[in-house]
Structure formats: structure tokens, C-alpha cells
Length: 500
Image (cartoon, rainbow, N blue to C red; front, side, top):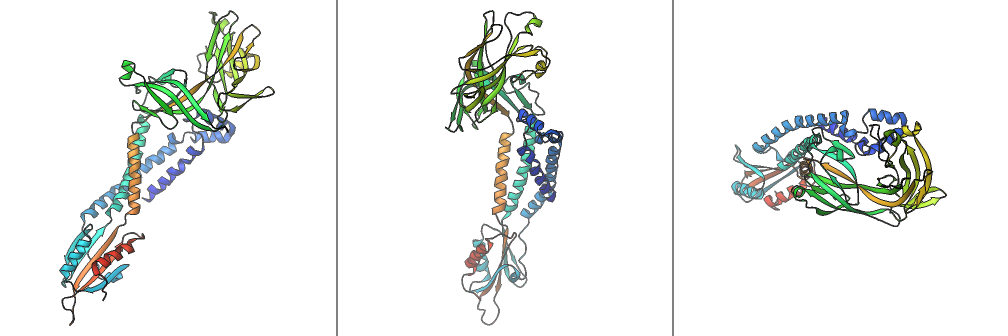
């Protein structure tokens, strides 16, 4: 048990980095920024797996050792408890006056009547009656076995919780996806539909629970100070037979109020804005793109990103790579300008504006390498293949022209939401074991293990007259307050007020 307690303390200590440091599986961007900002110290922590605490080797080792230690301490304790349940209450001590709670009185009842009254008073206790060699009748009573039972339930539940969490790591998965709140859909049909996906060890992404979600609208409420008050998304979803018959079911998705369907939980975990740009090319053709930009300040939702365009009507790959466009910069949902510097003063989209750079050239999207939707390939800028051709601030509805006649119009904003999909087949088991932990701990802390002994000895001497000397003793197995009052009640019930 000492080893288990040490390991439990180490496990609690090991979770501190997971609470204090950004974790790569939750926010890869924030983790990368933290490492970059802290130089060699951040790189050392990364090598020591402090940014992936719960999947690290050292955390898993503590976890496994705690499991082994719990099994090792529970096996003998369970056997001892079973033997204690089968054993009879112990013999009455020879000298009850040595116990911390005791009383001796002479009553007019005979020993049989005294023992019968004691048996009736202690009817909910485990009782054994015996007769001693001198003719005295004794009663041994014990109560509080639930204390050790609660202790065992607590530890077995902890063991079950550890096993459930381990199984959950094997067969669970979690993913994030950004969906435009304009009727766009997301279907849980494969890993490629996610922006980020974190599978369990036994999950390969080929057998996900099928469902579809359609995001019709998103609304956010803010206080005058800009503090968030409420978020909700009006969605429709399909799962099970609905996928075959095309039925969509409405649902209002709120923060910390997930949609539960097809064995998965769908959370509303974030939101942001996507600027809408329309580009009219020199040949008269137009393209309109809506690409989500990444918030860099969650208080006022100042965002940054990149919206990329391929020129229409250009079939030659080499020529096309010289005329690709990227619109990058900052987006403010409620804009204020300090000279030419764009600021966002409120998180709601009351007066949107952008401060953009227009880049033209080779975006590098044909290279076969993946790149972030929030930025351009910096190596293309460094090599000179992608050059800035214009910079301007635009409010919604305003336009700008490039040197070749291309016209760019900022149409406004559209909201997007970030959905987190979580699948954990052991979540109900985790809940059940967590409740058992609380129940077992509460039982072991509130129930007291205690014993009561009664000895009824026929009085001797000339004035005995059929009277009986009754000795009562009590002992609590733990030093908890409250047993003195209980023993006093038992004493009054058995002996009355007449003392010897």
C-alpha cells in the first residue's frame, strides 16, 4: 500500500506538466509557439515529452506500475476481508475495565434476561453468545464491516478506472474539423475529412462511426465589454437509418453540451471568421473564395490567414505558376484604424475590415507538399517565386486594383465553427468507476468499525438475591470521534441508570 500511495502521488505530480504546459495533441500551434519562445529550454522539454504528457513513456510507466501495485495490495486485502466476514466476533476480554469505554452495573434481571435484552438492542450487529466456565453469559458484537468494504470498493474502482482509461486509449479517437456556418457539411466517413485526427492505438481510421452534420448558422452573444456570453450553432445531423432515407434532424449545439450520436460526441469547441474575396481577372472571369482565417486574439478575434486563387483560363502549368494569387494579412470583425494600422475593438462582426498583402507568383501548391491553409509557403517568398504586388486596407464592399487590371473586392465575413468529434467506448465505464470511487471513499470515511462486549455474571454474596453483575465494554477499531456517544446510548439501553 505504501508503494501504491507513492505511485499515486507521482501520477498526480506527473499530470502537472499536462495542466501547466500546452499539449501538442490539443493545440499544436500553441505548442510550437511555446517551444520557439523558450529556446533550448522548450526544446529540452519537448525531448522529455512534456508536451505530450499523457502519451509519454514516463507517464505510461507510472501508470502501469500503479496498476501492478494496486493488484498486489488488493489481492491479500480481499482475502483477509473474506476471512474476517466468515470469522466470529472475538471472545469477550477478561478485564473489560481496561477498555477505553466500559461500565459495570448490578441489575435485578437474571443473566438470560440481560443477554436477551442486549441481543435485542444489538440486533443489527454481528453477534455471538457464549458461556464461560464460571457460569457467566457473554455476548460479543461487532459492526462496521462496510468500512473495509468501502475501502476495497474504492481501490477496485480505481483499478477499473485505470483499465477503462487504458482500453479507451486503444479504441478511442478524437478529431477536429472546421466547417463553414453556411449550410456546409461534415461527414465522419474517413480520416481525410478531418483537419486533425488523433486515433487510438488500435484505430486506423477505416471503420469510423458514420454520421453527417450540416452547420446552418452560428450565433455568438457578447457583453458590452466584449466578454463572451453565449455561443450556439443551429445544425442538422444524420446517423443510422437517417443516412439511408436522407432524414435530417435539427439540433442546437452549444458549448459543453455535445451532440451524442452514433456512439460519438460532437462538441462546439471554437469559432472564427472567414473573409469573402471576389477576384475579377483581366479576362473578365471572376472567382469568389471563402477561406477560414485563424484568430490570433480570442478577446477581439483579430485574425490572420491566406486566401489563394488559381488564374482561370491558363492551361500551361509553368505559366499558371507565375500568375497564382494569395491574399494574406489581418482581419478585424469590428475594425478601427490607427493611421494605417488595423485594430479589432470588438469580437462581433459589426464593422469588418481587412489589412491585406496581395502576393503573385508560384504558391507552391503544385509541389506535392502539404501546406497550411492559414499561410503561404515562406520558402516561395524567400526564393522570389512569390512576390508582393499590393498592400491595402479594405472595409466590406470596397475594392482594389492590381497593376495588371485584376480587381479584388472584400465582400464581408462568414462565420465558421470548429467541431471536435470524440469517440470513447469506455466513457460509461469510466463514469461508473468514478462514481464507485466516490461511494467507496465516502463509505470508508464515514463508517466506523467498532465492537461491544457484554458479560452477565450472577451476583455473589449474602445480598445477591438473584441479581446480575453486568459489565459492558466497547472498542472502536479506528480513532474516530462519535463512538463515545454511541457507546453511551448502548450502555443506557442495557444498564439503565442504576449503578453499583
